[in-house]
Image (cartoon, rainbow, N blue to C red; front, side, top):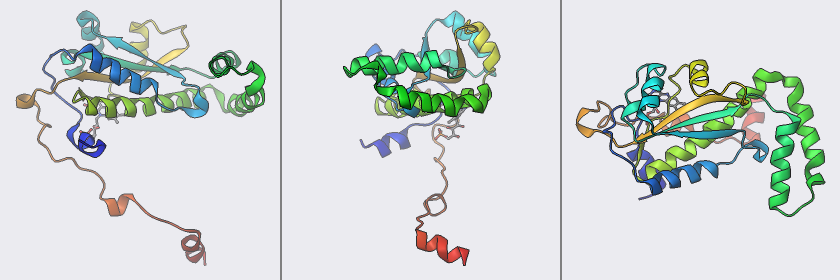
Length: 219
Ligand SMILES: Cc1cc2nc3c(=O)[nH]c(=O)nc-3n(C[C@H](O)[C@H](O)[C@H](O)COP(=O)(O)O)c2cc1C
């Protein structure tokens, strides 16, 4: 199967059957998620893995009662930094330099640049930026899950503040951004399973442009 076949196979599963996904498949999906690229390599997010049914029931209550939250095998909760700080950025860059056997100071100019760029943009912009990085990781997780023939439902449909409270994220510097239940589709009871996958037609989606095209529309 090619990646394209896997992406055609996957869909935002509405009904899961409660079957357990083997740990090696979960590990594979999490590893693909960890390998996701991020702006400046900061990886300003992490993933919580939840299988505890009592906790999943509580999450369902604040996720518009979406059944996948409890019918899944594992629930991934993506959480991103609430802001950038000198301390956080330094920690990541120091770790990177240690892994590459380079002096910590190697990244000093680059670090000063990004901090001076991000600081005036404010906390809200920063939280939005870190959240965007977690969405890239979500995409990696979904593609890996599809490759493993594990169903997954990307979800923004939950009350972020309530989830942060439930998971006791206050004071940790993380805020929840996304949910990703992983499990197996219940073919017989999922209204979406056999629906045609609909995407913007290629001719509307892809536009090739050149400088010549742009100059000619300007004139
Ligand atoms: C960021 C994001 C948030 C989403 N939130 C939800 C959600 O809360 N509940 C849900 O059932 N589907 C959710 N979806 C699924 C989309 O509706 C679905 O991906 C889209 O309609 C395309 O269909 P497909 O994934 O089945 O190909 C979300 C998708 C994305 C990418």
